[in-house]
Structures are given as C-alpha cells and as structure tokens.
Length: 430
Ligand code: GLA
Image (cartoon, rainbow, N blue to C red):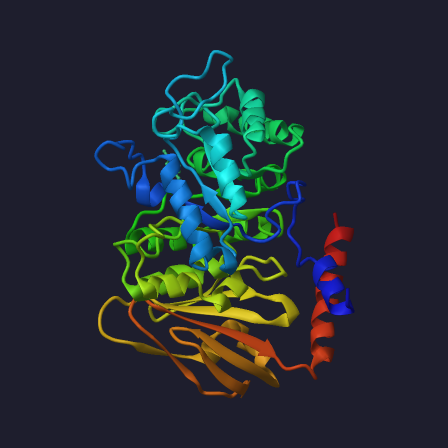
C-alpha cells in the first residue's frame, strides 16, 4: 500500500462503522432483479414470457452471458416476491410454486451457476411478504438453511408485515442465521426503509448486519420517482453517506433504464447518479428486448468504473444553483467524479461553467478532465482558471471525471495531515 492510500484508508476517509464481515459486496452489487419490470405476474397461462417462473430467470441468465452483460460485471440474477407456494412444505420449509418452478430453486441455481452467474432470492422478515406469500418470521434459521441448501447466493429480505419495534432484531437474527449456514450469502435489507416512519435508523447496526439496505420508497418507471429518490438521498446524506463503504451500501433501488418511463436524458441521469451514489446496479428491465441506446448506457464501462471504484466512497450533492445540482464522488488516486444535473424541465440545453464545481479546486494548479456523458470526450489539461462550459439537456446529466496532476503532492499531504490532526483533536476530546 503506498503512503497516500494508507492515509486515505486510515485518516477518516473510510466508513464510520464496521461492515458485515462476510467478505461480500466489497464493491456495489451488479445484476438484475425482477421486481420493477415484472412485479407479481403469476399468470403463466396467458403471459408465459413475462410471468414469474424459472423460465424468466433462465432466459435472463442466457442473455446476460450472450450479450455482454456478465462481461461488463452484471453478475446476480435475482428473484423478487411471488416465487413461493402459498404453503410451506410438511417440514415447515418454503417451497417454490410447483407450476411456475417445476425444477425447483436448487436446479435453477445450478443452471445460473453453470453460466458463471449467481442467483438471488427474496423473503420477508415479517409474517408475510408484501405480496402476501409466506414470511420468515419464526423461521429464520430454517429459511436461511433452505436457501443455503439450494445454493442461493443473495437474499433480498423485505420488511412488510412486521411490528417495527422488532425489525432490528429480525434483520439481525436472519443475518446470524445466514452466517451460521457457512455459505456466503449476500444480504440485501430493507430495514431502514421500514424504520424511518418511526425514528432515525441506527446505521452502525445496519452496516454491521447487511450488505446493502433500502432507505426509501420503491422505484417506479418515471422521472418523478427518480427525482424523489435523489431528493430524499440529498436531504439525508449527512446521515446515510458515512455508512457506505466496501461491504455495505445504501441502496436507492433498481435501475429502470430500458423500460418505458424515462427519456434517454433521464436514463443517463439515473445511470450517472447511481454511480455517484455507489449504489448497487440492479437492473429491472427486459434484457431480451432492450433498445440499443439503453443497453449501451447500462454497459458504459466508464460509468461502471466509477460505480465500482476501489476507494468505495459514496458521493453526495455538493451544490444546488440555478436549477442545476452538482453531485461529487471522491475516487481512488485523488480523482473526482462529478455529475451536473439540469433540473430545469423547460427550454433546451443549458451551460454550466465547470469551474462552478466545488471540487474544481483539485485543478489548482492543473488537472485533466474526461467527459463521460452525454458523450465521451477527453478535455485535456485544465487549470483553476479554465472556462469550459458543460452543456446539459433538461433532466439530463453531464458526467465528468477530474484527475489532479501530480506535482502538487505537497498540497495533498498537507490536506491529509490537516485531516489527521482534526481527527486526533476530536478523539482526544472524547
Ligand atoms: C416491497 C419492496 C419492493 C418489492 C416488493 C415485492 O415493496 O420494497 O422492492 O420487493 O415489496 O412485493
């Protein structure tokens, strides 16, 4: 580890709390999850291509391998609600609906694994799932063991139909039950989402328990929904951003790119901002039938690189001015990713002077700038005085990365030492 990286890790740039120690989700999870696009469609007689059945996941897995999704990093094929039978089996175990999953989940997991992918499943901490299927309350150990026996790799654990005062205990007990199986199962929670209406969740405990956690409402296929998620995140960033880091992430819900409700500019905004937020990239769309532009966006390697950056810091909103929002995420090697979102939904493209980015100070004395959205452009060496203007479409986003030019390591060291002494003074005053 070089000195700078050592300082970045030790000197307070790492998350405040310990992550769930299962070695998983060291980078934000990437994959596909059925809910937003396919919901609780169980009508396989009339709609065999879109109903929740083993076929759907097998077909998605096939496409993910054949069409470059897996290669780009999308790894988990995830089942959401409505997969089980309405009754547990005679031994009290969950079982898949026999008509829609004739092979059972173990066979499906084997199939998905044979493609080099991983399988996710869904359950609920309470009495029933949100759609009314059997919940896990009172059966955490049995259910964890069942998922392990089936060789499942991820559990999305919902929070419907549960006394909110028991949520924490339930999520923690399921986390322990999963660990006890000895199999590595990524644990995706909705604990804080269900607790927020009552009080501020304990993010230290959540980070120790889960690999990612939903904080806010379900995403819909609309720009209003995306905006509401961004607004909520910005409003609560001081509370939630420090808890994100390797092993545990805030989850603003699925990517809906490739569906019906977003314009291409809005799709670019979702992709850019989800990367800035270090969010899990779980697509909910029909990969068998997706327009080439949406596909290229989801596969954009520069954006995925930001999402998966090894520093593992979540970004936040750093400025709001003239109907623009600036969001910044610190990246490894002292770099910065910046998204400039144009929130004015009238008129045409508007210009945003790049020197208006709060983090532009890393361009003193010099930096290089690469624009990733709306199109890839190397903008070369810039200085503090540069007067580039980014053009941003209504409800679209300009995404750039900024790399400071070495030579000013002295300033970086000074900055780190300042941070170190602030921390020391803080610790000593405790
Ligand atoms: C909740 C969750 C969604 C989805 C549905 C399934 O609303 O937040 O993501 O899992 O339940 O019923």
